[in-house]
Image (cartoon, one colour):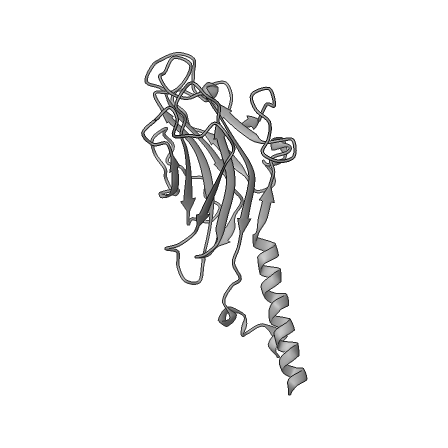
Length: 223
């Protein structure tokens, strides 16, 4: 009997490890051109829309948190005219089975001089890219996980790489198909506005917790 129990224990570890490996990922943003087509989506819904969206961060502004690359966004996400422009630039992570206890870790920083803002939002609607279609809407990404500097304080968005850790909660017990997204969201932004300058995101790690033992009891490994 001892040999049988040992086999089941090893089998359980294999099943849980496979699930963790399939769901967890690390992104260092070394080449942001490779994101699209590999599960990522970007939508620049700024009003009016500018000349750039998310781009490869420049070392001339600041260096990466780790390795050599990071992803950036700036005031040119909206047009260079108007003082009431709204930047709403989305970076949507790949589809995952999201579970309570899963952890999102990333580093972010601003430049200096003007107030910046960054949100992390969650959608429970599978591969949906529906963010509502306007600069102020959120669509399926209605769950706000983090809002860095919502009051547009000049110093509230650190201009050094700063670690942010988010633990998912409030999801269905069995998990849900969905994705999280970064949203560079700045009201009164652009070159003529009072806010927005330049931000970077780097060293993103999504760590999935193991599914419960009960979810694997029908696996053939327990036969």
